[in-house]
Amino acid sequence: MSFTVEERGNANSLSYRLFFKNAEGKYISPFHDIPIYADESQSIFHMVVEVPRWTNAKMEIATKDILNPIKQDVKKGKLRYVANVFPHKGYIWNYGAVPQTWEDPAHKDGDTDCCGDNDPIDVCEIGSRVCTRGEVIKVKVLGILAMIDEGETDWKVIAINVEDPEAKDFNNISDVQRLKPGYLEATVDWFRRYKVPDGKPENRFAFNEEFKDKDFAIEVIKSTHNFWKALIGQQTKAGELNCKNTCVSSGGSPYCCSADEAKAAVGETCPCGKGDPIPPSVDKWFYYERK
Image (cartoon, rainbow, N blue to C red; front, side, top):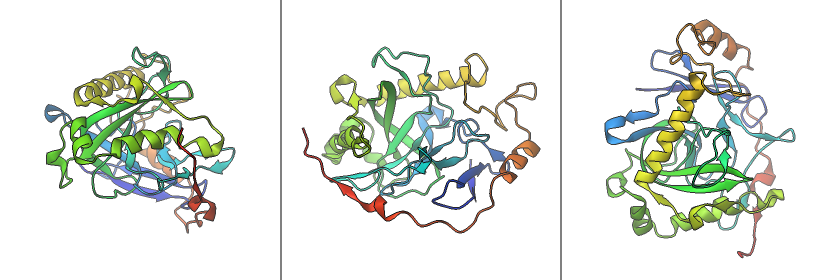
């Protein structure tokens, strides 16, 4: 199963969009149309890479836009970039999401006592290669961190690309602790403080900041897949989410998007043009004494 991407608009601008196509060249939604599993029997999941490692632009699947292209998050009319909080530079993993998952904001999690954040479940891929934006990779799940972000549950799955040279050595979260000592601690530190330069408080975590293991992580992913199935099956209110898709919903569903409708939606966006420069302020670094 292969996927390609099509850029629209100008990079580093409000107009930028990254649309997805399947092997037949049909436009698809990375939120709804890419299967959750690459190999269900081996618990291998697909991951949509939103942010390549070491970069700062806060790119994400646009859950409220038709076909859910990747675009840069906006705050108060300005493009969002994550700050470089010492000793980190940009994102310290390839960052993205598992398709066909959804953290339901109406469901209060029994472990975190908080509701979902209304997004697909996030993934931190720890392999050696820097991925490209929009790449769809196959990952082996290793564990999970339960972050509480402004009162919402925001799970962070830890995974590794199955094609990584080291993938065979990583089968659970304990392997990350053993083979990449300090990486998980750095991950907690990154998520705790990345919003502080924006004037926000530090994020909190459930389970006393401990990572849960592979089996726990897979069960969480499965539960978010069930929430997504209820969403796409119209058993749950979508709110502002755009559930249009070209491969999953049948013709009778309001979420069914024809190939012509999808093509027209992409055509309404700006054609790909020359990118704008990244603001120099993105390279600024911030130092905070750890509490």
